Length: 244
Image (cartoon, rainbow, N blue to C red; front, side):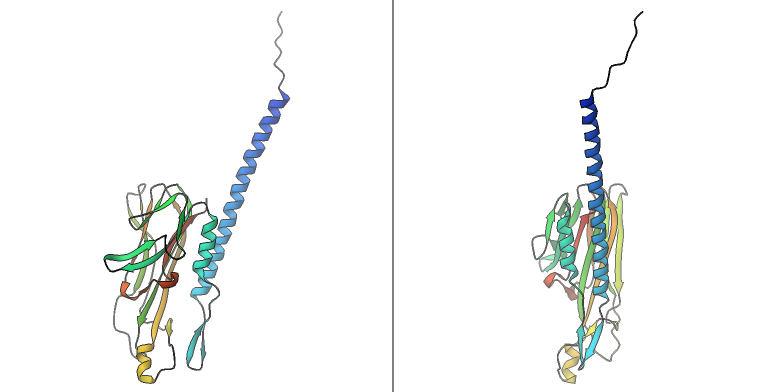
């Protein structure tokens, strides 16, 4: 009679298997921790931007002093630079090219990882969860003590095209009435006649959201009132960074 006995396990192979499983678990845990840290930073940026957008106006000596907690552009720039995939674009207006133009090579702009700027659109090269943000800043002239002339409201919108959807979709937008009570600022101590020309109305439309994007998705912006758009000092920007 032949008695079959199963081969004894190799202790070294068992140790290698346990080590590989442990390393795999550690890698997953580290990736999860990094994603949580990025998500927390995103929430911090959203809070900073919200605080900055809702800054209080303090009236002193007939002038307006604006209080703001931090520069949201710098905060977004710092957080984006820590992500493996990120892009931060600054806007400009060019006479020979219609519309708002985006660039990663000016000011605080940059691009890294699986994302590209192509034909004035952001193209995503890898599926994942992303934080998308954009801001458009405006300055218009408003005559004090007179009702504003009827005109279309300020508008800023982010569009997305995805092969999975097969059409263009607006993922976030903001509008604001021109020359509303909030946002008016008076500069200098000019005479009453000159004060009407010196007064300007300032407004920033900020957008931000966490969105699941797929490989090949394209993002772009649509903005009106381009003649009142402010593009200096990073006041108008567009970007994203990967969370997962």
